[in-house]
Image (cartoon, rainbow, N blue to C red; front, side, top):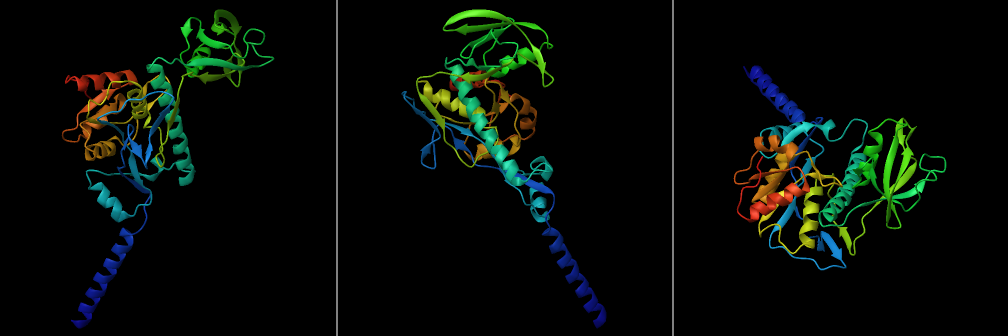
Length: 337
């Protein structure tokens, strides 16, 4: 009996030790949770997030808070089990956050680049909304290209076959929409004088081109800078754009409320989908938000992960976001998810 008791005791101890080892072993998953939120109208680390000089700005009684997702990159089974049973966290395969063949540092570097791009697009979209149009300007003309002798550096390109060119990417889209060898009517201004010219596209690198290098300009009589560190990815674009509009217009877009949201934004003001919407909703709720701006493409997922008392406002563009905020201020019913 004594020998049997010792055997049982040793077996139980061995099982416990194995269990501890298994629970403490790393697994190929990451845990996503609510990350910090930041008021784009306020200060972070003692500095204004949106900095404007050379023009008077307005102040807001409320907040426009961008939302983020926290990532736990090294996960052990114990943490994963806790995450699976948590209402606020999600456990996802590691490869969805850190693709095979890319180091954690490379992913973080790309996220930092995307964050910078989102700031530039937010600025472009917001200033277009405020009446500062983009100019697509010819930087160089290839000496042996289709536009040689027709277009010149400094020309502002305005249309292709009558279709307007509001941003640089639209010029590329319009040229590539027709096969190489197509005679395109290019609208432009030179020295303030409008004109048109025929340029026949030519295939280069398997794509139709007209042989010009362009740059995007947006003249405005003040300086604008976004200063925010330790956040990556493109999903803050919408909230940055709204913050810029709020600071450069007399009306308080928030109506004195805390509004949170997320969404990528392009130069044309279109709002795109993001990841981690469920975790961002939790972060917004914890920050005291009374409404959440949701990219239209994320609405279905947001509806499946609601936070009590946090209305989901559907937005597909900067214009729609501004309309939603206007309705919220007026006590109306903005478009919901």
